[in-house]
Structures are given as C-alpha cells and as structure tokens.
Image (cartoon, rainbow, N blue to C red; front, top):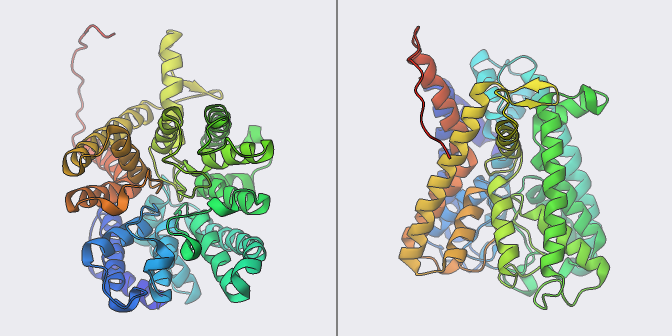
Length: 459
C-alpha cells in the first residue's frame, strides 16, 4: 500500500512543475490529508465509529510531522488499521517524502532525475546534489539497522507483559516512533496516556529509547560524516557544532531536572538514586522533540517546566527527524553573542569564520519561530482559558514537534486545535522553507550597489 501511494505521488510530482520548496510543502500536505481521510474512516477506530475529521486531521498532522500530541490515547482509540496508518505517517514524516520515494526508485531500479536529486537535497537540508543518492542510501540502510535493532531489544522487554505477537508489534512501533522522534505509544492498554511511565525503572527500555531519540535527532549529514570520516578533528564544522551543542544540552538538561525534581514527590522524589538519574536523563532527552515521558509532566516544578520549554524550543539538529529551531541555529547565535562581547567583527567556530548569511538566517529562524509561538499561545489562552504555562508548553511542544503536554490537548477547542495543527506543520517544514524563500528572494533582488552605512544606538 505504501509503495503504491509513493509511486502515485511521484507520478503527480512529474506532471506538476513547482519550485522544490513548494513541492515539499505540497507533498507533506497531501500525505497528511491522505492520512486524515484514512483515520476518519470508521475502520480506523477501535469502536467502529468515525472520530471526526478535525481530530483525524490533528492526529495525522501530529504523526506526519512526528510530533506526538494526541487528542485520544493511541491504543484505546485506534484499531490496528488506524495504528498502522499512524506508523506509516511517522516513518514517511520522519525520513521525509523524497527519502521514501527514493527507496521506491531504488527498488524498481528507476533512474533518479536531476530535479528529484534537487528535491532530495533540499528535503535533507543539503546545499548540493553531489553524492545525495549515496547519502540517501546510507540513510535508508542506517535507519533500517537502527530501527530493527531497537525493535529487537524492546520486543524482548515487552514480550513478558504483552505476549509474543503483542510484544514484537509494540517493539517495532516504539522503535520507529522513537527513532523518528514522534512519541506515539501503545501503552494505553493498562491506562490511557500513560506513555512509558511504567517502564521508568527498566534500564534497557530507557537506554534503547534514549539512544534512538538521540541518533534520530543528530541529523543525517552528521551520520554521513561520522561514517565516512575518522577523528573528531577531521569532521565538518556542522558535525562538530551539532555534537558539541547536543552534548551540552543533554548534560545541562539532566543536571537541571535532577536538581529541580530531586525532592518532588510527584516526579523523582520517591525514586531510588539510580532511577532519579535515569529519569532526569530521559526527560532531558525526550524534550529534544521525542515526546515520550516517564514522569508526570504536569507534576513537575515550574522551573522544570521552563527548562522543558527552552529545550523543546531548541529541538534537534538540521536535516534530522527532530523539530525546533535546531541546535546549530542556537549554536551560531551563542557564538555570535560571544564574538560581540569580545569586540570581534567575525564569528569564529573551530577555526572557521561563519558566513554572514548563516548568521542572518539563524536570527530570522528564531524570531519567526517566536512570533508563531506567541500568536498560537494567545489563541489557546483566549479560546480555552488555560494558563500561560499550559498554553506556552503546548505551543512550543507543537512547534518543536515534541508531543509532550501538561494534559490539556484532548479538551482543546476547535480554534486551538487548528492553531496547533498549523504550528506542527510549520514547525516540521516551515522554518526551513521560509529560510530558503528568503535566500531565493535575496538573489532575485540582488543589486550591484550598497546603501551608505547608518549608525543607531543599540542596547
């Protein structure tokens, strides 16, 4: 079914001539709408009743944009058909349409055109087409190996509780969902919206899930660099910056959550020291756009909620399955601040000078993201009369394609759900697309002269 669907989309793409960025938006939208139609069918719901198109669209957007926000518990609401539709949307949304379409082309040994290579490069956030097919092949092979390994390890831990078939099925589902940073789970059999709270003491499950989330959030370009190049000093600047910022955020989050929740009776308080450390590490990992939780999010201290919002806003790395403004964007801004403090006109990172366009793009991405989040936050506060913390947590979670919530998602109004749908879609592809649009616009309006400098007071 997936093969036929992707083949159909390829045929449509060949007949319609659009800019690559517009094509990516159109294909993502078509995939989500198709998923919404399928999830709206009575056969997709466990009780045989249609859930309604808005909730189906919300779920399809959340799955296709690998977010994880849900209006109903995934296990209790959806039949096996509905769950498989969600799983397909997660896989396509996580790897990207063009990566999945390339799989079909390689399977049928069809020649990949130059236009398709351009689409592949843009969907993977690459600036050139050289070696893009080889890179895509590595992505597909690496994804299969990691997801299969994760599924095997998780299945071993799930089988004792859910049986052989149920354990293997959940192992596969949660492995794909974890690697794609989606956060959808099937643990609702013994409690709705329970996520992985019952597996908080399980070291293997925690480590496997965290490992998949981190690897999925590093970015495919980083994979390629690590696989083909030996030694950190020989890595590309992008790879070095991703690894540095990722490590800093993971360590910072773990220490912060451990300190803030250590004595909280609703989260880490009653746990042993080992479980406290593991719970803090898992929270630090999952807020980086994954969406699983092993502790009660609503029960966290205000400080932890603020740290969660900050980490959700940053998200994962460019060209990955994660969302947010991305680690590299924040890294560039931080180094720009350091350069400004030291009076340097150049932003230097690992012996390389940053291009001005990269700095401008980083600033634009953050400001546009903040503007979108502010608008959506106001909508939720007005439409549903929720607190600022609840609203901000929900909107940043949607934009960062995280999927964590303080428990307000199922009860939101139509206006709020539509705002979150737009924010999830925008968070998955909007920032990247807008950055490209700015680049194209600047090229079209390029002038062969420069205006005189103007001086204003700043700070």
